[in-house]
Length: 82
Image (cartoon, rainbow, N blue to C red; front, top):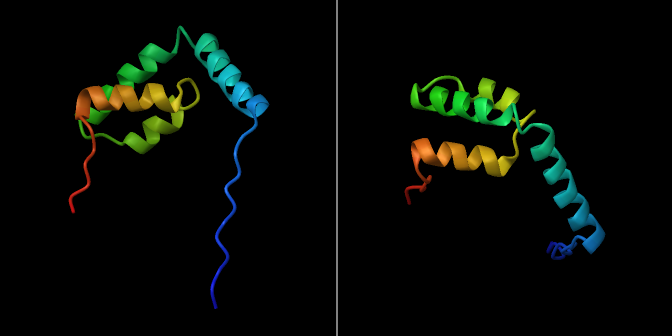
C-alpha cells in the first residue's frame, strides 16, 4: 500500500504578517525581562544545569531566535555525528 504524498500548505501573507507582529509584540513586551532570562539560561547551560526547567521559564519572555542565539554564544553550533 502506497501513501499519497502530503500536500504542502503555505502560509498566506496575512498569516506571515500576524506571526511577525506577534514576535515584535513579544520582544517589546519583554524588553526589560528578556536579557536577564537569557543570561540565566546561558549560566545554567555553562554549568551543565537543568536546561529544560530553565527553558520552561525562558520561553515565557523570549523568542526561539533569542534563545537559540544565547545558547549558541555559550555552546557553539550543534553538529550531529554521522
